[in-house]
Image (cartoon, rainbow over all chains, first blue to last red; front, top):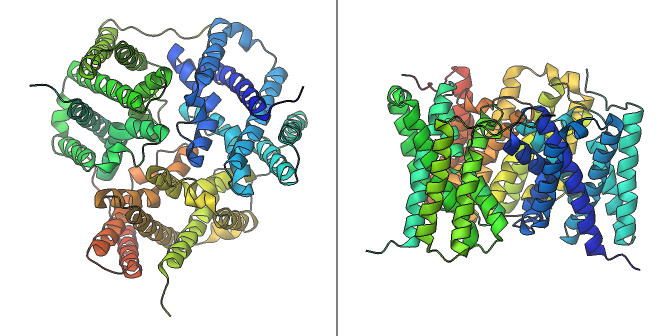
Length: 207
Length: 207
Length: 207
């Protein structure tokens, strides 16, 4: 059976949406928000990056709002957090980091692929892929009144950027969509996990 | 005389804009912003929700920027705060809460009505109605560097969501626009005021 | 030789972009962000105002993302900060303030000019010019978790607003584009620098 590209894109996008909704919701619950606040943070984390991308591409209403699949998936993630919060909190940190990295990897290749579909230049496609990956987390941190973690820790946004670069270069070199997405996602996931394992940090600017 | 729907929508929108401009301006003044800062916060509170809604709908430039009526109303609200600040501060809290709830009720039904006019699905119409109601307050709180109040206190966003749900269900069931708007606004206003009076809070997630 | 308007607009825009990228990057470095975080803050400061303007005008993808010139200029500004950080830090404050005021002056006239090209009403053109000037700084301050400086200090946004008003009035009165831009930019620059020199502050609201 041949994978159909559109369906693949949607499945990857929904899977990442669920992962980020659970993660955002858990952080909102840890910040002692009420049930609705947890839902808002889950929603912002899950679809914030994609909505920013779609606004910048002029694809409105954003894909995440056009279909009821995304709100439904976010509602499921929210219910998981609410019903199973003690369970969610008990998930070992390495598992959480891996799930988050998987969401990041899926979002950056999905975002860059969609940008290329809109015929933007390759630099912008990489930028939009990166924004798709990290935008939700930045929104979440702004709502929770924290300096966005992505601005100062770890090889996070860099991993999203690498995944998007690999996707865009692969597509320009003629790779099929599914293959380029797989290679890009693996590149992002790999860099992120190796960075965490070895505690890699980007240097600060000093002088 | 028959109420004309378009005019009704505009009047309700401008009334809510004025209420929110005064409220946002008063909070900005209380945060010791200068005259211009008070204007920016009044502006963001008053039209922030509607601008986010219009960006998501692709209706640009946003309605609040296309006509000079909105900037004019906001300027009036700003002048009221600047000239009558001691008076504004002396307004009893219950009156302020009621005025704010009235603005919220108007915005959520106006936003959901406009979304339906753009032929979006009902779930998105409810979401956009809620965003219209609470978006300005979230922007205001971000500018004033506070965790958005809507994320952690009271039956606020839930009331906006209820108003939007009632409006959308009413319209789908064939109610006239003005009637559905009235019923939705009353539902939002009622839930909000009862919630305040009885000090209802949504539970936090625990475990 | 006759100045060609489009080219003039682009040159002014790119010059202001470079100034703001360096300034934003230096603030990010001072906040101890890592290399990537510094790039994000430089990027947000430099093109944030223009992107918000373009989203509100419906000109998507925003101009700053359509061409690779803007990312290239921002990368240059980022490199300057990273390589020459001790040098950037040693720039005397009056020089920095003047460069920032020059960037502000260019952005407010560029933004208002572009808005007029899109046939918006004059009030909105002034508003969009002001947003183009101060929007990047607001985004930067939100990312660095500060109450946006523009909301509470100095004659800053007011200078951007004055420059935009002068530009719009000049254009409506029939001035050529380049002349109106020059006069508007000088008005903004002058008010800003005089305000700093004399330590002018807008009053707070009291009562």
